[in-house]
Each structure stands twice: as structure tokens, then as C-alpha cells.
Image (cartoon, rainbow, N blue to C red; front, side):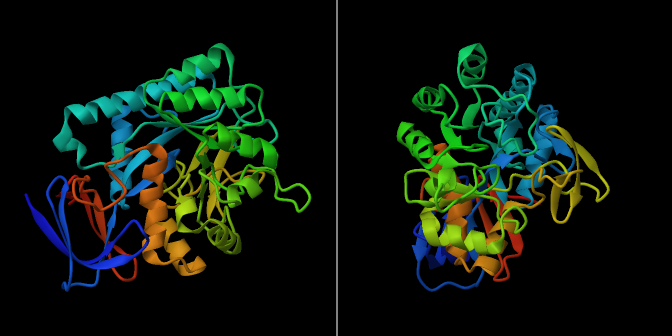
Amino acid sequence: MMRTLSGEIARTDGSLTRGQITFDAKIVEVHEGPAAGNDYIVPGFIDLQVNGSHGIDVMSADSAALRRLGEQLALEGTTAWLPTAVTSPIARIERAHGAIADAMDAAREDMQGARGAAAILGMHLEGPFISARRLGAHPSLNLEPHGDEFELVAALRALRLVTLAPELPGALEAIGRLVARGVAVSIGHTDATLEEARAAVGAGARMFTHLYNAMRPLGHRDPGVIAAALANSEARAAIIPDAVHVHPEMLRLAYTARGMKGLIITSDKVALAGAAPDAALEVGRARARIERGAARLADGTLAGSIISMLDGVRVMVRRVGVPVAEAVVMAATNPAAVGGFKDRGRLDPGTRADLIVLSRELELKAVFIAGRELV
């Protein structure tokens, strides 16, 4: 059914255009001009790093649970996502991948039903090819990115994004091989020097996983990987804007350095997000609880966020001073570009009608997935 919405439409250049947008399953027309309504009409958010939410953990979920998780994400304004598998024995990663692939197959077979949930676009594998010095909450099961175990995960059919440490033996060759088969590579959980990080970008890496976190610290004599992430390059820096993982002043530094085009908002949320306040979760190497605004291990180590993508947009707008439409580019357009998802992340004729409506106060008013409004 054809629909028309009026208001301020977010564009990929970070501007807002007053007008009307007409759509069914895809966007038919964007008409600029006088229009009633002051709501923001923006593309649905794309979260490239979701470890879990609402009590559902990606590493233990079956395909039905992943569908339920996608339904919850959609109600938050996230219309597409990458379930994220973390450092684990290879057999467990393969099991998580099987559930993700099954969920994607089920959605393709039932296109009508799939519209009620955020679309799974593939698997993000964060580890085990990471630095033993920058594990964060990951268990010490890290591997080098070569050999039989790397071959097994590199061949997983739903694999779309891999976070790895570029200083590891074989990493540059691994980046080249992954990119050649259409898998995006992100630099993260790394002790890389500036030169090692730049070499990874040169080999084809196109993202940095959660800037500042689980990375070699920034030093004025040893700039390291963070300096590479803050410098202009073809690799965008993904960041967790919950004001816990990253202080707002450091968010502002990243925005000043990279601008709208160089940053990606991601939630890095875990199953404790949306769960009962007293809930606990096995995360990586230990149990985690919600404490001081995030999931933490007993020793205080951060183990993931509890925010939605919309929460992250609000922090960037309200506490960093990023214009609304620019924050939307970081949450929708840029993630789509990294993942090669050409039919999403922008409001142009012919793209999927995955869009959300926000009030002037950035409250979620409506979500449309493939043109169908969620109830």
C-alpha cells in the first residue's frame, strides 16, 4: 500500500530537506517543497555490532530467538543488524553461525513475516583473531588468523564482517582474502602501532571496532592504532556513544577529527540490554551485570553496552552537538557503506522503505520496515 509522509527528510549529505516521501515496499519519490509536519523522517538504523539484547545472547540463540531479538531491535528504530559472535571455540562459533544463517534463510522464505523484525544482514565475527593484550571481556582463546581454523571461519557463508588485530602474524594476508570474498574487515581488540594499523587499511580494512576501547592507548610519542582511526582514511571509526564506554569529550574529539563521513554509531549491546535490572549474563570470560550504565564484569571491566542505536544518536546530538541529520548518517548511511548494503541506509527512490519517524525531541514515533508500519 502506497504511503506518504511529510516532514524534514534526512539526506546522505547530512542535511535536512522539508518535503514529502512516498513509498510502498521501496521508496518511490522524495519531493522537496513546503510540507506539513515537523517530524524527522530518517532511514532505519543499521547496527553492525549486536551481541544480544532483551535477555537473548547471540552466542546461544537459535534462529527463532534471533527473530525475536530482531523484533525488539525494530521497536527501537533499528531496521537491520549484524548478530555478533565473540571469541569462543571454533565449534561454538560455527553453531552461532548456523543459527544466524538459518534465521536469514527463514526470513527470505517468509518475506511478509520478516517485515516485523530488523533484517539480519549477516554475521559479525569479533574474535578469536585478536590481541591477547586487548581482550577486554573476551576469554583468552585468541588465535592467529591463518591455518585450518581461520579457513573454517573464512568459509562461513553468512560471514559479513570480521574484527581482527592487524599486528598478528598472517593478518594482512587474511584481510586481503576476506575482502576478496566480500567480507568487510574491521581493526579492533588490537595492540597495533600506527604503522601496523595503516598497513591494515592499505590491505583493505574499512572499519575500526569501538574506537578507544580495547585498543593500544593514544600516546603523544606512540600514537598507535587510535591515531590511525582518528586520521582521515578509507576506514571509518565505529564508536559506542553511551557516554560510558567513551566520555562525551572524546566523542567530540572523534567527531572533530573524522566528521560525519568518518564515524559509525554502533551499540555493541549485550543481552543485559532491556533485561531485568538484577539479571546476570555470562560474557566472555566471566559473569556480567549492569552497573554504572553498562554491562560490567565483577572487576569493573566493561563487557558491552545497554543502549539502543537511537540512544546513541541522542548522545551524539545532545551531548556532543552533532546535527541530527549527521548523526543519522553515522547510524544508517555509513554502516550500510561498510557492509556493502546498497539498498539501505538512505532515503532515495528505489531503496528499501526502511525508515523511522522521530519527533523534534528525538522520540520514536513510527517504524516502517519494507514499507510496513510496525504495530
